[in-house]
Image 1: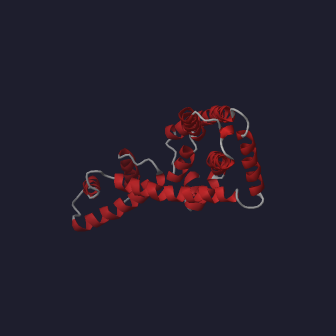
Image 2 (image 1 turned 135 degrees about the horizontal axis):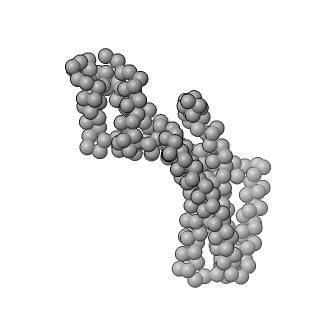
Image 3 (image 1 turned 30 degrees about the vertical axis):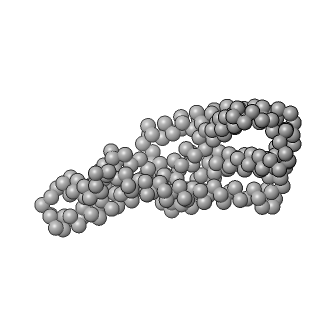
Length: 235
């Protein structure tokens, strides 16, 4: 016996009911379940589709699909990190290294001003507000996708989620650092200012890459990762 198209669709719904929300992970599981069901039918042809499906599902153990989901998330996390560092490295090569140097020198100059920590906090606070506005728009778009039951890929979700609240988190960490140390940046030795300036420059680049560069190139990156992406989205 062979799995029908209607039964394949049922398997997609089955994986979704068991908390598998990303289309690429669903497809991998559906493919596995379909092959296993056909093997079960070879041994027990009297079983119904639902019985064979449930028998196949039991092989995943008490945690169901959770182990598969975690494995795919780890795999895609590595993929996302490679993409992120690929774009970050560009800022340390010509011609972007000139912009990176200017950002570094600007931060270093600001740090030498008295009470510069509050200038940085103010700048980050403004960026955090701007980030929250964008975050609100992203959540509305995500909600629309969920309502329409659009097919969302795991990497696609990561691109949207990773940039969420990046500036806000940085602002909170810097605020805590300023309160705990009670030290003025302008009183620190130059080597400390160089280290802080470099760290701040790297944070700025990470914010820009995760918040703007990768989301703008999302379509291209998703097609690069998933050959079937364009076809699925056009269905």
